Length: 192
Image 1 (cartoon, rainbow, N blue to C red):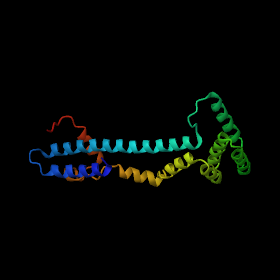
Image 2: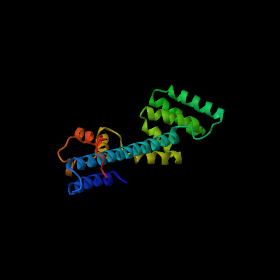
Image 3: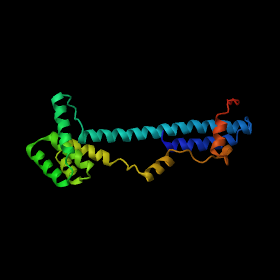
Image 4: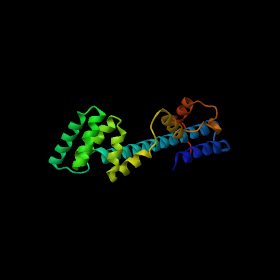
């Protein structure tokens, strides 16, 4: 179910309650408020799921580009750690480029990967591009990551709106959120 489906159902439910003759006005409002609270929880779950999926894709891409590719051999792990430490000491683009070219020429994939990770941290996109061009797995991971939306203030506002409840309608029209929440928490009313 999509956020739009949930939002549409909330509006339809609230408007349908208006015509019910078997409920008092207060019972209608409590029923609508409870439905709205449940829908809000569903929207929150969908939002959290979408955020987790984006985080998982980013983490997978990061591992494919710059992390351990599956070897748990202690020697390989030490080589990887040593390469990261040596790459971390480089602070100038020229040094980084020279070391990366040497690693590529020598076929030292561990060092090339560590230097590409350092290049990413230094915003040296030319080196990252060269690394990705020579590594099809990294290319696919980078493409998957590039398809994700940029998470900035505008994205966060859009996401908040996308996963929010629509304005109250029908029997809840004109009510403030705190009033609706208070009604939803009203345990004194039982509605069939």
